[in-house]
Each structure stands twice: as structure tokens, then as C-alpha cells.
Length: 145
Length: 145
DNA sequence: TTCTATGCAAAAGCTTTGCAAATCA
DNA sequence: TGATTTGCAAAGCTTTTGCATAGAA
Image (cartoon, rainbow over all chains, first blue to last red; front, side, top):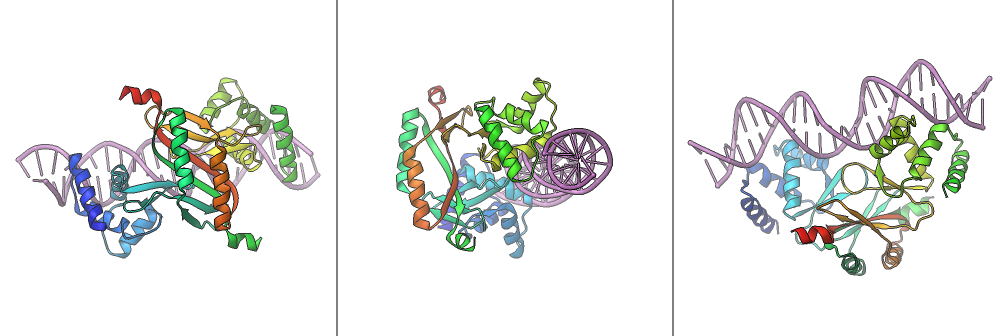
């Protein structure tokens, strides 16, 4: 699947007159090795642990390209910084976030997905994407309090 | 309704051992005069236009208190800064955002609200609040392209 | 009178950007 | 070869914070 993603990214870059560089491949590889959300700092840490040399600036720039190409999704938990997760090969999902311990649970829900399409139709909007974050308290944190 | 909000805020402050200052009243007044979302800069601009003297720091600090008290909601459109809107006296609503012109349409949907409660129950979460932003293209912007 | 709040400016985070040197096609 | 990309450090934004002074209860 990582190979498929690489092909798709290469196509995207070509269509925009951009180049597939060593750094971009390195970043894509790392992004598609993590099966959870991560922030820029996480990604840099993982890259450096593997002795892979990429600058912070390139990480930011490449993540933008990956988002534009549709391979990666930017997720906002309202923390004042962005998280990312690769979406290629996955169904879209939303997040349940524990306000106490920060745990994030992914879920997919067709009722909500469908309903959003209906709402868009009602308002004449053409739907592109959505972000749904539900904040609350996870079972463990409820027990503790 | 503004008076009710003021009473509720005063109660909240008292319960926390905090004081109802001139600045906090000024900010609350302004927040409850706007019937749309706004960012900190917008609020400061409105205050200064009315010759009301409040520092940026107090605006940030008071908005936090208003959010904690449940009178105001913080809204995140993924722009790297926060928007706010007063919610006292309103039903909770979500947002449809046009990616082209930036227009924001509010909507309320009971199907989605209910479904979220069910999802939380499934995962054992205690629901606190949620944020749902749907991004797409509004009717006008679709015509243009 | 005592404890909290304000304002200011500095600092803190995250992200973007200008530019010279390096790299891809 | 020519255009794009990289890395670095500086700058840009939003938001937070330390501290002396002012103000609420």
C-alpha cells in the first residue's frame, strides 16, 4: 500500500510540475509507516531516530503536499497545532477524544456520513470533507473521578 | 438576554472566587452584541471602535472564562486561530464552510446530535461537546466555477 | 485590607518564508 | 542546463505569562 501511495504521490507531483525528491520519499515512507495520528514533532523524532535526515521546513512543506494530494488528512484537535494521519487505503473516520487523559478513539459512522450529505444538499453546498471531534471522558477516566 | 448572561457569568465567577470587573463586563457586553462568530482581533477592533479600553491580554483571559462558564463556545475552523460565539440562549449548532469564499452557514441537526450520543454510549464515553465542520463549496461559488 | 485582575511587554509555540546552495529531470 | 527543492535561520501569528500597579469585595 505504501508503494501505491508512492505512485499516487509521484503522479500528483508530476501533474503539478513538481519533483519527487529523496526527502519527499523519506517523509512519505515514514508517514505511511505510522498507523495513528502524529504531529510534526512526532514525525521529526521518528525520522531522526532512524537517522533519516530531513529538515523541519521540508516536513512542513511535504505534509502540505501530501494533504493536497489527498493521501494525508490534517486533523485538528483544537490544541493549537496540527496532527496528521494518512488516509490512503482507509475509510474516513472521526474522533472521540478524552478530555482528561487525551486518549483518541477513531470511529466510522455511516449514519452521520449520510446525514451530512443530506444537509449539504439542503443548503446547496457541494461537500468536500468534514471534521467531527467529539470531546468527553473515556470509561477509565470516568471510573477515577 | 444579555442581562441573564451577565447574571450567569457573575454567579460563575463568584463560585470560583473571582471578581466581576469593569473589563469583564465590557467584554461580555460586546460578545453578546455580536450575533456571529468572531476572533480576538475582531473583538478588539469592535471594542476600540466604541472607545472601550480593554487590553488584549484581558480579552484572552476573559474569553477563556466565558468558555469555561458555558456562555461562549470556542470554534475552530482549522485556520490556526480560534473563533468564538456566544451560545447562551441558542441551540448548539454546527458549521458549513465554503472553501472558496469563506462563508459560514450555521445549521442544527437532531439526527447528528442523537447519533453522537449513541456513538458515545457504544464506546462508553461520557459526552461533553463536539465540533463538526463541513467544508465544501457554497451555491454561489459553484456557479462561478 | 486583602486577594484578584489588569496592562504591558516579553516569551512561547507552531508554522511560514527568503535566500544561497544543492538536487532533480 | 534550468527549474525546483532543501536547509537554515529569521520572521510571522496567535496565545500565554511574569510582574508591578490598580481595583474589587
